[in-house]
Length: 132
Ligand SMILES: O=c1ccn([C@H]2C[C@H](O)[C@@H](CO)O2)c(=O)[nH]1
Ligand SMILES: [Zn+2]
Image (cartoon, rainbow, N blue to C red; front, side):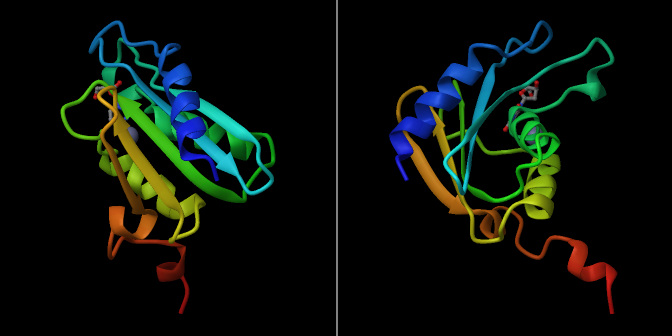
């Protein structure tokens, strides 16, 4: 897997962010097991809570196209440290991606942090908890 390429895709996705309220642009790029890349950006709303983060945009685009096997996601924003996904996105990643999938967090300075979905939300509530 080419991490640099995935980060470039996330940077390109970030350019499309719709952020009239926060002015904080985020981009994500989700790699499928068969090599497809879904880009996502954050999309805000005057009713603030309707905002969709970049990570969830990318994942929801993929799922809605019938892709469900994911290898990695890269996320980028103009932050001091590599941008940490919010709690809602961590929960959605846990639901729809493998626990050991790589999450590549970065910023515009080129700082990179790699961790897994499980490391982002250890002990998180998941589908397994619904069944006996
Ligand atoms: O990992 C993150 C963190 C924040 N945001 C968005 C939500 C909102 O539009 C803006 C400020 O929180 O950044 C993302 O898209 N992804
Ligand atoms: Zn989020």
